[in-house]
Image (cartoon, rainbow, N blue to C red; front, side):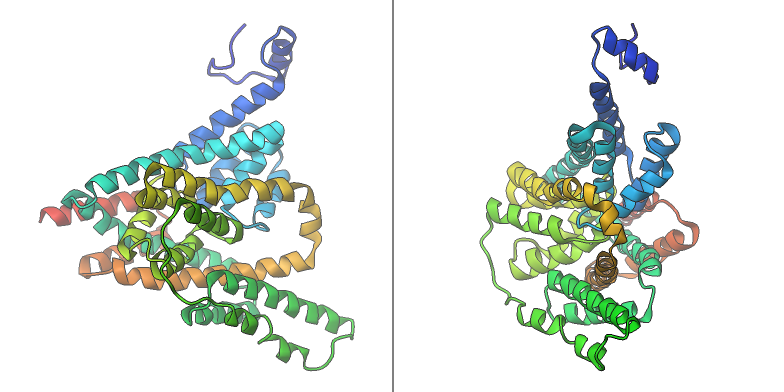
Length: 410
């Protein structure tokens, strides 16, 4: 009988015959399917979360027919209601649907592991040769492209997220609050709480139960106490335990695109604790963009720079661990969450606040990346190609690296 690795996927009848003859049971076959698919995607899924989602839809709905398009959309919607890296959580959901609880773990690990290994190799080369002219030239050309990629993500996400004037005001208030030093987590919580109160007041008004003036009192409600809770800046000694807890926190509270990660990294690792330099942060983001798979493997790079291989493992496990937990817990609750106006209001507020944080940190990073006419030109051309012609960001990053190397040889 033909083995499982023969190149052609067995039909359902083949699986049944194989099981009767003592070959691996259907669950084992399903787990192998999950492992092979997500390992391949982990090595080839360039282009960020939106591209990852499109690749997964093509594989599991159109080609393999593991589930219907409606089921796929339900899982995609579920990932938008929980914190963490959306495309990784979608992979975990799909693995669970195909292979049960074991499939949940297999899909997540197989999607993350290739990106982690590639980023770890890049981090090792960076630490060893990062000061060499060739590496400096590559990063010189890649950094401006990264700024354009983030701007393109902001443009696309903003058109969907900022649906009302109230949400636009929340986004503006989030930018101002973050600029005044309010912690990113508090900005996200404040935005979500405000939108719940706002939507609640509108629903109450529709039932003629809203006291007059409630809307005016809400504006300062969630944000003022949160502002008082903002901590002072102070240096903190580096430790693996502290690194792990930091990335667990990040993985537990980040909503929206993986690019929001930049705001958390810069505020704590660069400004508050002094573990990382501004240039190192940009280099970490650049490497995260050059490699395929989840953008959150930027944590792998940072962990290696700070603590070698143990630091890379600790940071990677820390940032992705909450995703497995949230998918396992939220799966059965998806229908209830989708019917809840409270969950929808929180998500609206958190999404626009996330975009606001992305915009603020992009301005900060742009100051370090756009240092001369060449880098400004690279950023502008990249933004034009992304927004007008939708060029894959991988090609732009490769082009930026080539320009950086040519610039070095001049």
